[in-house]
Amino acid sequence: QVQLVESGGGLVQPGGSLRLSCAASGSAFSSYHMGWYRQAPGKQRELVAKITRGNVTTYVDSVKGRFTISRDNAKNTVYLQMNNLKPEDTAVYSCNAKHWFLAQRDYWGQGTQVTVSS
Image (cartoon, rainbow, N blue to C red; front, side, top):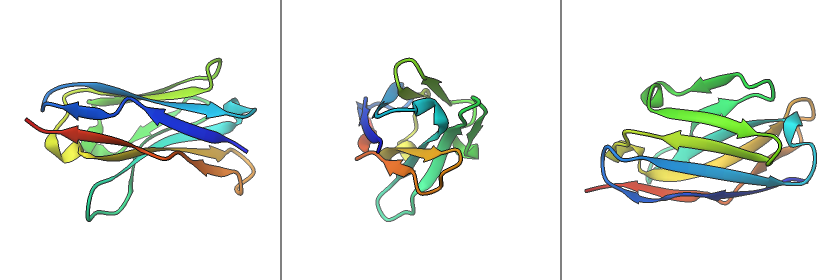
């Protein structure tokens, strides 16, 4: 069992920055691929960024060049650095952990609100 707790959300002006953190409890954090998802009101949840257990990263086109995902296996934490934020980035951001081999080990955090507004 893995529990995920996100932090770092808040209100920021357009062009500003935030860093989200997702702390995982339990063992074998390095065995999980980690992802950040977001869901805006009235929209479907979308994958924003993911990082494999081998540190390969991918991003949705709309955040490329602005967001950076990283992980610290020693701290059981994954981060999402968000720069040059835009109003359309406003959403609830959630962290996901997927075991690299055992598909049933798929966990979600509770989410953190990010609001980009002047």
